[in-house]
Image (cartoon, rainbow, N blue to C red):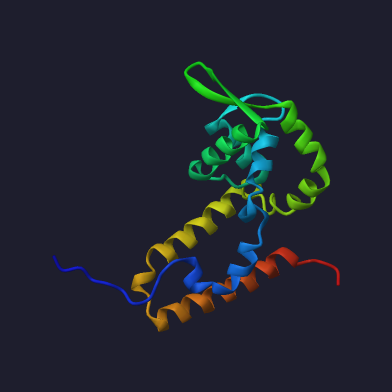
Length: 174
């Protein structure tokens, strides 16, 4: 078979390498997902899917099952969460040790998650959907982009950002 290989990598870090530092320092990148999970099951037992949805509803972003389930197992191993079967589903609940951990880390958790919920894409679903769709279109088709097309898209995005700013701040007193 004849496969075509591409010399240039694709994806968000190829085009936005300057964001790597900001993303790598984001609280979710350093094991703090456990706090989101523990907060989700603090008031009532939930199954894995319900935990993911609870986090998405509260913070506007959903972690994937590939990170949630290992985190749940870690929390079970640490004694912060226990699991049981309910209606043929594994449900998770916060233990007394987990409640103690949340309380001991309350200030840290508050600081970490002040920014996690921003922006809440679900508070502006039309805009969030369109931004995600645009990003998906660009990154899933990056192999078709040459330098000239990339520059055109960058210029269009810069102009769009400026116009959106004008709309947001029009009629604002100086």
